[in-house]
Length: 417
Image (tube, rainbow, N blue to C red; front, side):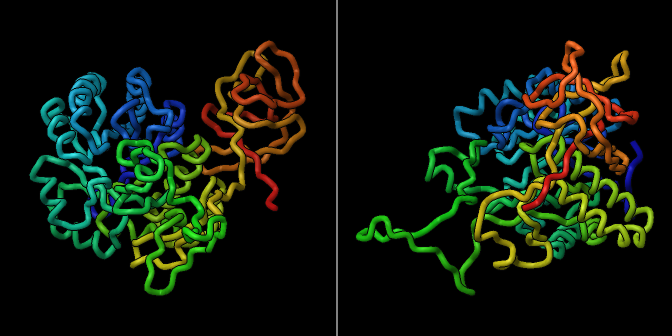
């Protein structure tokens, strides 16, 4: 894979993956690196996550294409986690990830002992808000620190000026925003007994709240905030697709997408759009500027909660919050990923949502091309013709009237109410 550099610094597009299939999609659609979680010690317990066997296959797939793989082990560990963590790192050592993402000093210490030759990246979960924190982790042996989401671009530039040139800064530029310092949230634990800091968050920040006065049960009063209040619940999603020049010139090394529980369609859409935007900016800033409307239209083809620029240009205000609902905007439906071609010239897919013969759908290609096609034929595994594919994860063979490539993604535009 070609290296992307600015002023001598290598730039990285870092993409999440929930499972082996999504890792492969991330690699094909433009990732320079992919971050994944194992079945323990990461902060996405509800994600599908990777077995050690899948992790090994994923790392081999990525490395064959010049892409790195980082493994998250960023829980805030309790005493009873530590023995298991040591064993886990010993297993990871055998399969060779490029780095570990860690937030807890105890986990960091064990990882350095067990995997001394593997880079360690300090997670955003460690609340990295100043250059002294970066310097501290560098002295402990960290290669990279992930900036807290609370930092502005001005603060990130100041950090770059105060840390060694070889030290890397990683920063989230797209995806869901956690409430509380870089995700260290106690709401879930208090309200449901599920620990957000150990991977089991129930996202109570997205719930709708009212106040009930003790002597008036059943009378719900809405919650209002004035100019002196802080808006703490249900943030819009972060999106910096219009501000690639500002990100690239700030001294950030790795541009990170949030979303280790997202679908292959989401990952492909976001990875491809940011890949095009970064590459076209490096090629010609004027080309990038002229293409911003295209990038914006593409990035909105995956599920999202409206968009904000977060803390990058100063403190967020009431316009960064969503007050009337906690649902996603969904313009496209994910239908499946194209597999291999059979002897009859039909292409295999594992269906993800219903579609029918005669329906117009879209083929999404890694190079940025979108092709509108009509479904000509659908067959099941036994070669029997079908008018539609109503059952999730059906193994199908399809004819779309054009040649397809493995890892092309099929999606359908939905009518908006």
